[in-house]
Length: 302
Image 1 (cartoon, rainbow, N blue to C red):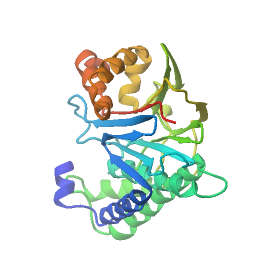
Image 2 (cartoon, rainbow, N blue to C red; image 1 turned 90 degrees about the horizontal axis):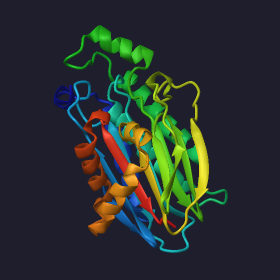
Image 3 (cartoon, rainbow, N blue to C red; image 1 turned 180 degrees about the vertical axis):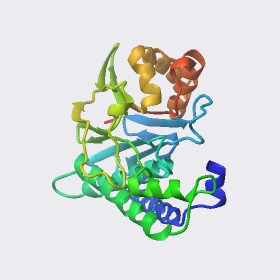
Image 4 (cartoon, rainbow, N blue to C red; image 1 turned 30 degrees about the vertical axis):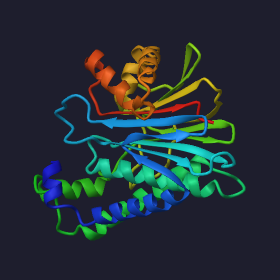
């Protein structure tokens, strides 16, 4: 389907891409930004992230995960140090990969903008910003798409998708470091694990029943937050945030990533830590990795 979408894009897609470009330009004025793969140096550590299509999959024409990393340009006095924004487009939802990108950039922009205010960054404000962006995109799809339908779908099928809201649906997971604490909020089945010394603690456990997964969409009547929490980060802290493709592996063997992480860090290429971990997992445990794979690592992040 991806090729046919590119041959004949929906008119509203240009609006989504324009919004994302605007967010990216504004965020670059306040900090450094990485999208999908790369790393960022922190005053006492670094961020590393990578998003991968994963093993061959019949039901996924493209990588529906999106990842954005941001860190402040201010080295020491910034109240908001860094942000990880991660989303996983719902497979059965049309154009979900664009929805995932839209919520990542919109939520990130909200967190960075609100950090300048007295009350500071709030996860709920970021979620509301992401949900509002999806609602606007949904209205644009219905308003601008009269007579349009995907080349490989019947017009009646597409009309049903529009009426039922079966398009632009995505999960969202945010992690950000403000002052001396790391905050996390998620909608859906993203996961997070905190490593300290030789121990680990699963902060965001993932529900194996995909039927119970919440998501954001253009017609979401009520935003249901699955988890919201904050933790202290110390000098030896390593925070791993990931989509459900990696979460399945983490639930079956949560301590294994620590060994892979140490071997990766030993190579000295810190920015490629997340990429190296995903490649190692693909080689050692391909059976449990049957989805797109996205991982972000924050090391000694304050």
